[in-house]
Length: 377
Picture 1: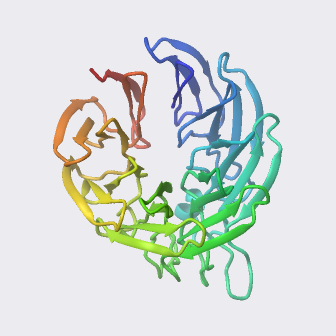
Picture 2: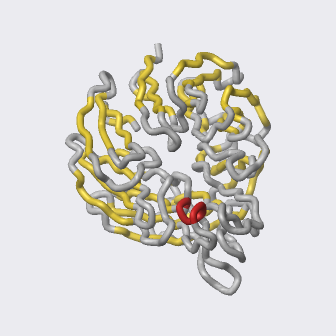
C-alpha cells in the first residue's frame, strides 16, 4: 500500500515495515507481531493500520506512519480457529475490518467459528460495534459466514458492504455465501442476498456443500442512468451486480468454473465502464460490461492458478502471477502487453502510485519474498 511517499507492507513472519517509495530505502521495521499479515495495510491521518492473523485472537494494530511506533492494538475476536484476511478500511475516523476462520475450517472437523465485521476507533482502537454475520438458532448452526473480503463503503448512504463464506455445520445460516449491507453507525444488517443456500463445508469434516464463498472484495459503481450498484465475485465462478439500496440482483455473469479454490477469489477492479477480475482456475483474467454484465473479453494468462487480485490504472490492467510475472493487458481489448519477470511466485496485488508500479513476491508456500518497483514510462 502506497501513501505519503511511502510503501507499507507486512509479511507472514509478523513484521511490518515502510520503504521510501522512490528509492526503496527501508525507513522503519517493526517485528514480533505474533501472526502473519495476510492483507494490505491502510493509511489515514498519519497512521498506518495492519490486520494480524494470529490464530484464535486476530488483531488490528495502528502505527505511527513516520516512525513505526505502535499506537494501539485491538483484538478482534477470541474464537477458536478465527483469523483475518481482509484489509482494514478507514472511514470517518473509524476503521472497518472483517474476521474469518481459515484455521477452524481447515484444522477442525466441527468448527464453531463465526465471521464478523467490526468498526474500530482509528485514534484509540476502541470497538464501536461488532456484528456477527450468523446467529445460533433452531434454523441455523451459527457457524461460518467468514468475512474474507475487504469492505466497500458507500459514503452517501453510510452502508458497509461485505461478502461472507459458507457454513461449517448444518443448517447453514441465511447470511452464509451472501453479500451483506451494514449500517455504518450501528452495525445493523440492513439488507442481504444469499447466492448459494445450504453450503456446508470444511476441509476435515463431511462437506455437503460446494465451498462457494463470496470472498472477493466488493466494487461500487454507477450505471449511466444513475443506478448505484455493488458487485462481487464468488467462488462459484459468477460475478454478481446488485442494487445498493436493496441488494436485489441486477445481473450475474459466469466467468469461470466454480471450485473450492476458485472460480473468482482474487479481488476485482472497475474503471467506471467495465469490471475486471481473475479466474482462479484456469488462471485467466476477464472483463465485463458494467451495464448488463456482458463479457467484453477473456484473456488466458500463463498461470496454473490465479489467487491474486487485479488492479487497473490509466487504461492498463495489472496482475502479479503465480508463475512469477508482472503481467499487463490493454484494459479496453484484453490485448497482452508487457510481462516482466519477478523471479518468484506471487499471489499479492499490484499498487500504482506516483508513476511507479509496485509488486510483491513470496506466498504462503514460500519462505522469502520481496517488494519490487517498476517505472511506468
